[in-house]
Image (cartoon, rainbow, N blue to C red):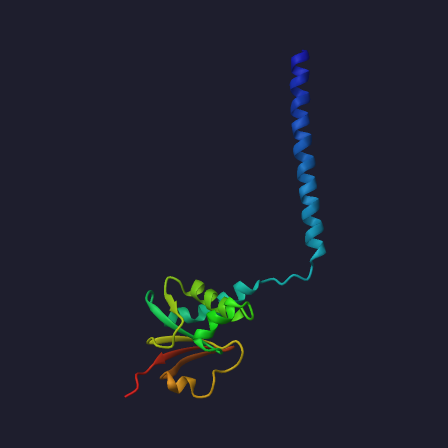
Length: 151
């Protein structure tokens, strides 16, 4: 009889411990959720993914595509090294992530080139110099180009 009481006490203790721990965790979760009611419903990565995913139907399933943005291609990595502006590098990396398994090359010298102009249009003459012809403008600074070789 004494052994069965000890067993019930042990089981009751474990159940009580689990219930109190669960209550504490749920209480913390509720406190944090109510402390930040204005959090956006979607994060910047999801927003960028949805924007870039519009390109998928027009791209080959695998292979390389070019990439251009508001700044010169060489500057994307140079400004990141000094941490003066990592936004362009982040946009490039997220574009690579979204378009995988395709390889996004930081160059306008490929048959298809993604134009991701988050800070306004490219410099005057940039498109002509690189033989980039708009294939489709998705709006919001996202344009797919095809490259025409100069005669």
